[in-house]
Image (cartoon, rainbow, N blue to C red; front, side, top):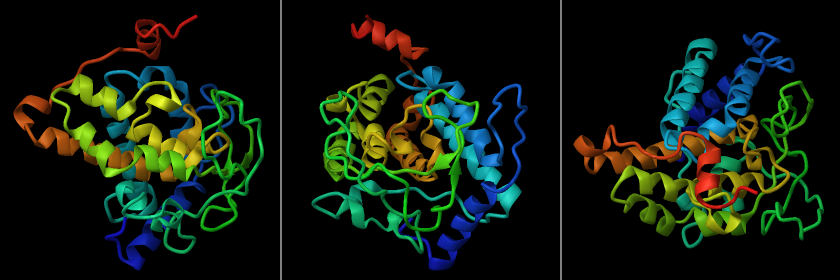
Length: 276
């Protein structure tokens, strides 16, 4: 995103604002709570959550999902560019400060954090280092209505867009060292496992680093089901896709079609002994 001109940034934001005003094309029989076109993408992610995370096709599914969203911005809202990526390695120490990322700029980016909301930090689902949790207070999406979620709810639950920055979590998992570790894997099976990490805050990867760095515990990005409710989701996943392509390009003939791993989430939970 850093390479975009102010005009290009404005065109991207305008296209996203366009897609959150167009009517949904999803039948109410599938997701009763959908209202706007943007909801179509959120409910699609929600309803397939257990089939698209911690599985072998996590990366290709999200590559396709991000591409469909990009095409909607272009074909339905007149966006002319490619969807940019967020290189978070430049926004964590020693290269930068997370909260000062241009992605969070209120004029040329996607806006910042929500105010701090206290919770029981002994809760095992409390992301360490969280600093927000409330409704975002800066443009350009301060008036955005989130309708899907939390979690698997597609019946409709209108509320504000919330964020819960954790600079600590972002710094731990979004640095160049973690990205280099990911790129050093010799096959897709291990590449995918390192990029996603495990279902634990102590075993995350660059995927979880972006989600929990922005969404903490009470932000939309931290919700495994509902994370596409935050437009930053697509910036984050565009960069994950860039990392995957960088890995593929190192040995394209062997890696372009290399894929392996569980088919559904419950399989990895069973293999790791995390099922009751």
